[in-house]
Image (tube, rainbow, N blue to C red; front, side, top):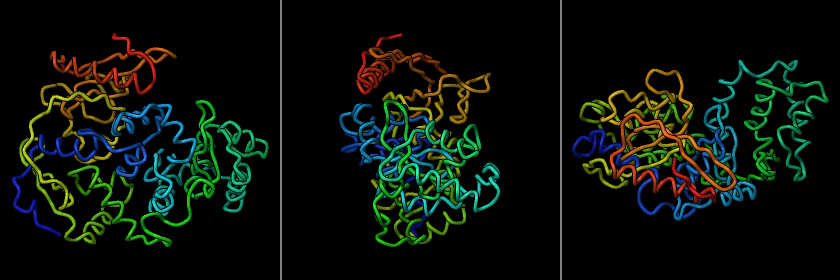
Length: 388
């Protein structure tokens, strides 16, 4: 384990932000394709499914269309399930099995108060067996179809109890996302969509190897991050995080932040990543989905993405505006990686209009950058951008 920054100048918030933008694939030519983006990030939070497609596509060369992203899900090139934390994530087929074996026990513990009482372990297993039989032999079932099946057997089919029955089956590697049916999600048999073995780990699972693989993937794609950042993102404990960093040894180094916003933050990076360089805000505008990995990857230090020029800017998450409890504008406008406002979309079969709520006015160059990104988003959805 290398020393603190290996003699580098302690980074301020601008350098941390610039490092993260590059690591995330939000700067430069982009990663070659959608699979490369998801593999690079390891897991992509996606409970807001269609906005999450944009979050992946904007990191890929050429900004693939939403239609091509949906096709990738239907084909099984990308999969969506509950992993890391009790929320949806998009993952690669080769990564699902080892990620679930590493993180599902923790998610089960968090979910335990919400699992419905079906009468004991045998009854729990019977409900899971029903789901397994329903999706066997390539039969992809919608949520409504599975609800109808459970209801016919006197089992919970609505609300939180039904949601957690399905989540338990996902965590137990019984079901996973299937082909889209129109705009509806489906569930499919896990083993029919996920290859045998444990991807980068090989034919057998090793928990310590899984932990270090996830840490490498995370640090490579997130840049500078704290122990608490990784623990919050992965759902693992801070103790396990520290054990993983110790196991990586000389592959990683500590970097201590400087300046008002980053002062005292003890962050980690891979030593073979590009060297840290002082960076000023680049002025580039990003339209990010509200749960983009640029935000949810950091529990401890995400507010480095606050805009210093927006005096009343709220915390980056939860999604709040000054004087309100929650913003109806889910998504984020960032300039140079700093949050300057929020956006929401009105999407029709032919047009896209974006409404905004800004923390500060955009200067002329930033407004031009916003329009460029709005056009890019409209092209992703295959419609025409109509300025507000």
